[in-house]
Length: 305
Image (tube, rainbow, N blue to C red):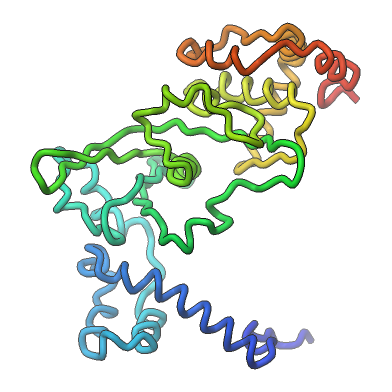
């Protein structure tokens, strides 16, 4: 008979257990306190019991606040948020209608799900984290102590929404994109308006220049990421958010092996779909490298052995 499972806090020394509990409580409080004043926090039917309990007690008591949160806030699903999120797609979309929707202020972008669990994408407002959380590992690319990182990333987006601000004269753009694309743009402060001004940019440590990240074509995106990665003999780390992306890269390397090596040898950017707007920038970053091509020919494609 297996021994009963013990709580993590019970398995730690008393002082460490108390420190961990305090850290968890404070982190939870830092998120829930501000968000409890949002439109969702104040109006969502699913939070009615929580709001009632807070109103009847001492709303400034953090211990009581967390106790009510843990006891009265149930697990939620997208249907609870959808009526609030759809307001961002209204035409016109006014700041007063969407400000403080799920958190204070306006979101930095709308994350769009892949729709793999249903017929339609789901959308989640993503707000800029508090400064102490912005450098959390979830927002960072995996670092490499040496060499470069082969981490195919896309900055393409599905749509740009417009929010009319309260002054009645100006507006703010709201990007609709994948979570990874939005987080990268948020970390780097890369707005879409100046994407074409960044075509010559190459983030240190990455195998591919900025120009590759904004390509729309699936084949062009993966082919060029593979091309730049193969040409770089310093690659020390590979990082893929999805296994399917890794498989796609291997597929293009295997299928286009001889073309890839010819391009590396002669410094050629081949004719690919929808790359004319970035071709010149890519050519600047891709000199001929016959020595690397010869090295790769000797190694052979991924599945040659």
